[in-house]
Length: 495
Image (spheres, one colour):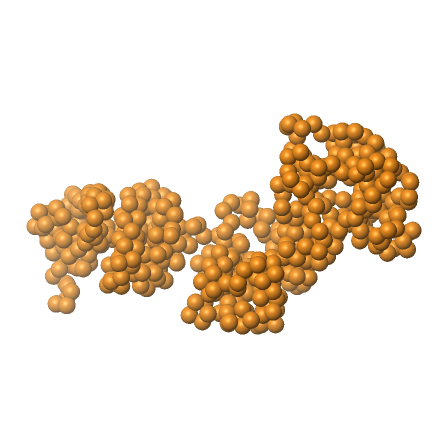
């Protein structure tokens, strides 16, 4: 159907239903197949064999024909596929069954010998008035009735008037069956090249594979990709492939890994419920094994703790929020460059809900000496700008969210000190000053509360030094020293 380049008219003989015609994409067919949604070359030919149609041209009227399912046999052909030059076979037909109306009926497959059932199986082929190279198929004995595609998968016979508000498509492109390999997907070729590889495959070996080379030469009509192009492809399909730049090697992720990555992207309980239902079918249909015991799931969730929180005592699991996952990810970063890249790539609506501990850790890593390369310096500056810009939201969330931990005075002092050290262009300085003012107000409120209650400040010596360095706090040094007197007397010389 025109406008749906991934969909094809297909047919099958369904058990209990008989011959059927429908419209389907390869992705839709995979979900129904025994391959369980996997992209494999094993399902490529069966898919396209069920799209193969042939025309039997009729002499009565110009452009009149029968459209035959080329790969389905009948009693007359002894179960063999219909051959060119021989009448008969299963034909696309306009037959209205008892539960249908003349205005909307499914395309049927009917056996018809020469001259039989012509009012049902004969069609007129008309060029599309709108799409060059496309055609329409009008029922020969029912003027104005056309074969039509109704999304998502219906193949119908409907009356059609141009410029109507119908959602049906009556224009179809015809493709030579010999060109079906143009629709092969790169992932299928790469999977086939790696089917005998247990783990990592060097990129050089992958490029030397005959099918991979043929795909680029014959299908894409282009030279094989450079390393950077493959890296971009694998990064864009990270849920299927893991690529290691330092090894110049790639690995196909296991089904378990892919399921885990798919589940980690779920945002709503309804989506999660559907994924879990699919997961049960996954164990049965894909792994061919009974669903895991509790201990197996616990092991899996423990190994993917950055995405899942499992409570053994409750026998329950929770998908971590996006901000939790980002916070855990940031906690493992060790270099300023890596930290800057993750912060810059993160969405603002996720950063603003980060735990304050993750923000403090991020500032600490970013304050370390990193590369002097100009691009690295700019990246770190942009990361600091983003962090400073969300500080107000981070503190507000910590104060108002019942499940969040409010930052103690020491954390606020540390954050204020980190922000105070940030320098850069005027735009960054303005944002920095606004964030610093907010932190100072939080710190002053905590100090005022301690003074009124006549209790020591909940600070260690290092955080006290950071607090004194915050603008405006030096003026309160006497009262701060009194509130810290007990801890300072017990501090070691090193502290």
